[in-house]
Length: 80
Image 1 (cartoon, rainbow, N blue to C red):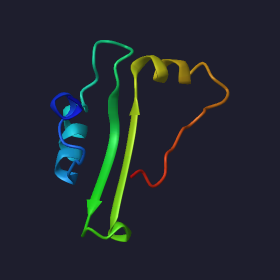
Image 2 (image 1 turned 90 degrees about the horizontal axis):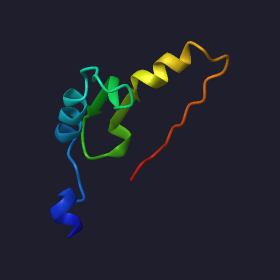
Image 3 (image 1 turned 180 degrees about the horizontal axis):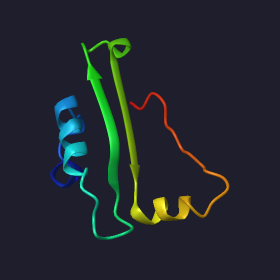
């Protein structure tokens, strides 16, 4: 059931790049996620030769940023 709903458990760098490109437009819904910027570099299957960075947000979060004195950032490193 999970495979039918979500697809295969792996994703290629090409699929990741396409996901980012599909979410570059700013949505009309202020709570919907969109990609501010991304970077994908894959030289080989060796993790030392791979790099991926993505910045996502929503309109509401960006609006709240202007009202804040402090910013909280969440990062996950070495996602498997």
